[in-house]
Image (cartoon, rainbow, N blue to C red; front, side):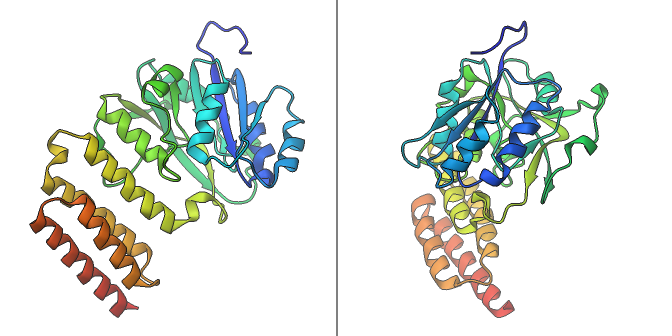
Length: 307
């Protein structure tokens, strides 16, 4: 149970799948916080490393541990963690990453009860030496505010795993969409902004992101597919000017060119066919759809010639 505090209680939720090598470091970074969380929840997504994961969790008696009966995915595992805690504020951490020692303190300082909060990241490889990490002064609590979906629609600048949010708001938004196997954080940011929720971003690198070649974020094909799915869902929900065909076209052409650039050295024909099929679904105006397909073909041809 959460310990008694005058300030809202904070839980850190850590989903894990195949990252047993890094879990202990992640947990120690949470326990090294200047504002120690009231609860730490580890959700094992039916990992083949379950025995090792449970050995590590046993080193931390205060951790709440849950093993999913089957592999549910990252979005569902985060939701499971949110259901297991009674704390008013939810914070998330991926099992192969770490938090800056002031990560909770500084994000909590810009949380006002109604907004969602995230932060900048610092990338690292190998082991992070937390004792040598630079400590920030209170006057360093500089934040920017993101208010509209169009501020992230072309490039998601919001750190998904760095989310700090009230449990009430999290569930009001429906939590993470469990149908998404990737980009579930991008989807949640868009839904929050669509409903008028402001997102406050600490400009300090409070989240340490590990460059992990085996991590889910390295699967570029899956990311491209789910990014497109998230954009489609955003358009379907939006009734403002962002639902207009030409705006959809601008957004779509940007994302598809980004996808194609990821696969310049792969089979462009099969990928082009996939993109054309998605254009039929996403772009309803025939003239814009035809222009998009033409742009895709020109880009694909230039990419093949360049290689």
